[in-house]
Image (cartoon, rainbow, N blue to C red; front, top):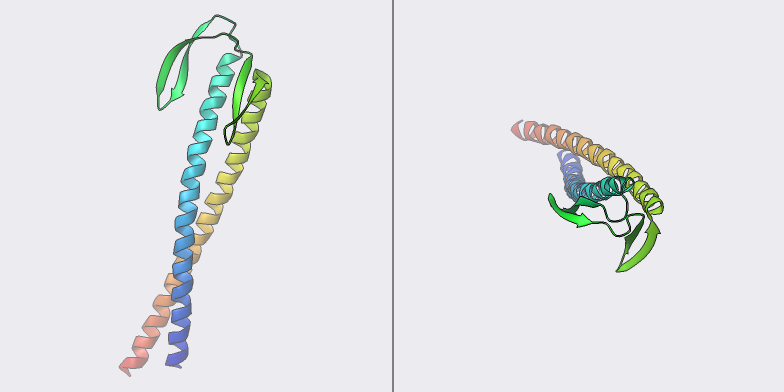
Length: 145
């Protein structure tokens, strides 16, 4: 009986280690998603500011890291959007705003899914910890007899 419990304890330990590893990966993914979401939200804020601007107007432009520069707008109704891998496209302000809003929505859903999965893994880890503790106590009790 004690041997079966030891085998079960080893299996639970392996599962616990894998669960903890998954928790760490999920934490990293959550952090990356938060950073991306913040960048897109900042970009969306700037695009919204541009909606009321005209050619030649000046405004403070957020360049990231809480740094702003005074900029004179040449054509605030046309923007260049980076798509990744060095690819950029010219878009109207409206098209760019819509694209960034979709990205924010998508990243928000991704963030929520990652947080839910993380919570599920943390709960599973707690259950495994409790099971391992219970089995270890049973093994110790049998050894004392």
